[in-house]
Length: 438
Image 1 (tube, rainbow, N blue to C red):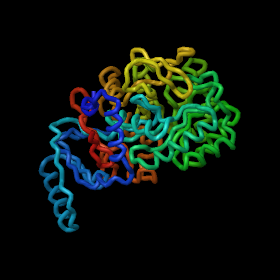
Image 2 (cartoon, rainbow, N blue to C red):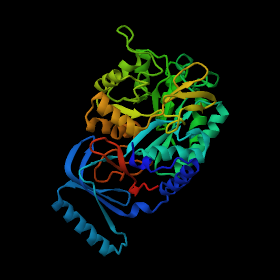
Image 3 (cartoon, one colour):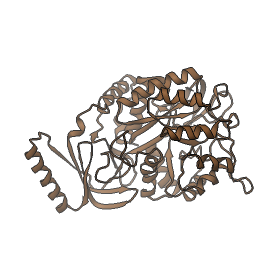
Image 4 (tube, helix red, strand yellow):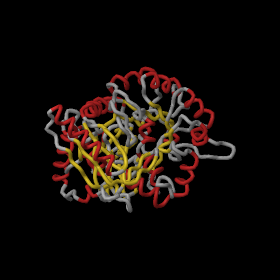
C-alpha cells in the first residue's frame, strides 16, 4: 500500500482537510513547481527502458535532465547552481537519495468515477475528495469519468466538472461513459437515460464541456453512432467503443471513422467467438487503437488479463473504473441514480447484481499485472503511464498540459513516483514538479 495512504487518518473530517490542502497544491496557479528537485541513486523505469544508478532533475514543472552516474549528475547540478546565481533565483536545490528504488512517471487514469466516498459527478468538493484518494496512490493525472444521468442533469454535471478540470493541473479533462450506450450492454447505467447520439446532442455536450472533453464511450451500432464518432473526432475528442452490441465489422467501421479506444476490454461488449470475433478482435487488429482494461482480477480474470497483454502489446491501458467506494469499507453506495452494494471490495447493483464499477486504484493494478499476471515491471508501468497518455493525446506537447506526459525524458512534465523496488508500493509522488504533501 502507498506510504502516503498509510499516513492518512481514519477520520473523514481530517481526510477532507487533506483534500483541501491537495487542491491548493494542484491548483493551476500554484508556484510550488518552481523549485528544483534531484532524485539520485534511482532505478529509472519508463516505457522506453530501465536505467540503473540513474538520476532525474525536475525544474519549473518539467524534467530538466536525466542520466546515470554521480559524475554526470555533479556536472548538471553545478550547471544549475551557476544558472541560479546568474538569474538571481532564490530557490534551493533539493536532493533526494532514492537508495535504489524505482522512479517512474506518474500514473494516468483515463477511466475512473471516484473514490473516498465521493463521485466525480457530485461537484467540486466531491472531486477533491476522490482525486485525493487516487493522487495518494500515485495517479498524478486523471480523466474524470461521468456516469449516465438524465440529460439535463448530465449537462449540468459536465459544466460543473469542466470548471474544476480547468482549475487543476492534475485533471486532464472529462470522459463521458454514457448516455450513448446500448441497452443490451448497459452494465450499471440507467437504461431510462440512454440516448441516441444525434448531432444536436453532440453539439450540446461539446458546448457544455468547454473544451475539457477528452473521451466519450459510444455504442457505434446506434442510429447516429458513426456520425457522432466523426463529429467528436473533428472536435479533438477521442471516441471509445464500449457498452455496445457491435459486431466485428461495426467496430472496424467505428475505428475507421475516428474511434481510438476500446472501453474496458472484455466488459460490456460481445466476446470473442471463432465465428463472431467481435470488438476485441477488431481492436487487436488496429494498431491505432488502445484498449482499456480493469486489472482487479474481478472484472477480468488473471488468465484473461494475460491474454489481453498478448493481444495488444504496448496498447493496453490500465484503468480503474473505480466508483465512490474505492478506498472505503464494504457497504451501501450509489452510482449515478442507482443503488450499489459493495461486498469483499466488489461493487454490484442492488437491482440486478450487475457489476457497478470497481474499488481499484492504479497502484494495485500495476502490482497485480507484475506479481499475478507476469508482466515485466517496465511493461506494467508503460500500461499505467505512457499508453494512457497516448490514448488521450497527451504524450506530445499540446494545449492541455503543455509539456507531454508519460515518460522520464527531458521536456516532459515532472510527474514522477518513487516505487518500492520489491513491492512496487508508492513511496513518494510529484505532479508537475510539486511534491505531494499531506
